Image (cartoon, rainbow, N blue to C red):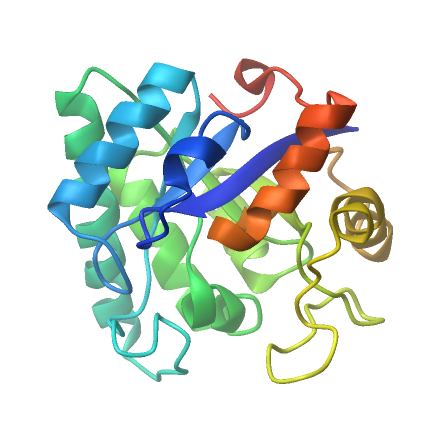
Length: 236
């Protein structure tokens, strides 16, 4: 199994620069839940400098609640908003001489797309419309993964190194105990394996995600253990 160590960046955390020396890919906020044109440019510049694969992190338009509010929007609205966000980051990346490699939805957009087929289809269609070569990242066995496959996109399943898992392989809701794991050995050492074994084994290449500053203990664990596979072999 190959594991890509991944983090969400450009969300206002002071730890972005340090994280970019530890991870192998990054999801950069595109302005709808956090970030703006300047933070996108800064993150892209640092990612290129550190050889980190660049991905877009589109969200519902929900800066007030950091993209964590459930929304019921028409599929065409979600398509347009997603295309707008990933297109912006792709242009910023290209202008700095880089290549955007993947797309991972953020927060409630990600969670709802795991279960809602029409929403998942709108996201996958937007990714395909922007660039059919982009990789679509989603929860294993989710509607988003299935939608990406229908459009012929390369998909990647994700394991969260700093989140708790339920028996069915879904994430423990943030409102419940055990949703966030801050112990670095438990988070990285156990969850990468736990999430992988609880989820479908169809794919053998996975992404381990740590959220912003909360992800630092996980990736420091990675730095000690030397877990950092070559990103070029399976992301770009």
